[in-house]
Image (cartoon, rainbow, N blue to C red; front, side, top):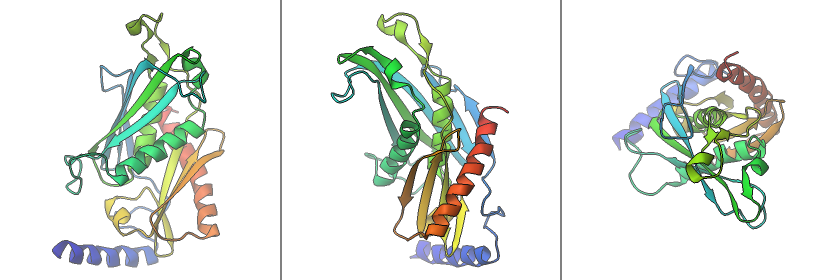
Length: 259
């Protein structure tokens, strides 16, 4: 009961701030939190990255091994994305199999990368119809303060760009750089009252009525979108979010590419 009372107090505080154009942490509605990242912090992985977005701290690793292709795509490699939300990252997370939130995060990250055609799957084919490279993208939350989707997408794209295919380990020739192109990134918005806010923290996520994630490629094309939570979004809110996502992911992309 105490937690519910505190949540209601926060809800009213955030809505009151939003009505005057402010957020609980002082940011503007269209402003991401501070971003920092580390490349290849996991030695045994084929590629990895650690990303901090505000207080959200996420690490993504790439592991690869030969496997059997899908019957409908015999000449293409396979991408599999998994995510775990462990109690060490946030007191609300529980041990056990992945919960629906964890599965949704993995699927949205996977879709943004997959639909952008960032990975050249044909170059990950070893023997058509028999053997291809299986790319496992593993997401782990170290510290959670909202917006795992965008943090994990950033970490995933960095990890893939810095990964090598371990061909020599399996007697399949020399190692080679992961066949990647482009930097698909996401911008996630939540609706609180009549306001759309990007990069929500935990409190904003908890009281949000609706969520929208927009995946944008380097050419400015929208590759995927994901609507979350039960609230409705207007055409204008979606359209405005797409426009903002295009400009905001461009800024993020410049940071992760070191420009």
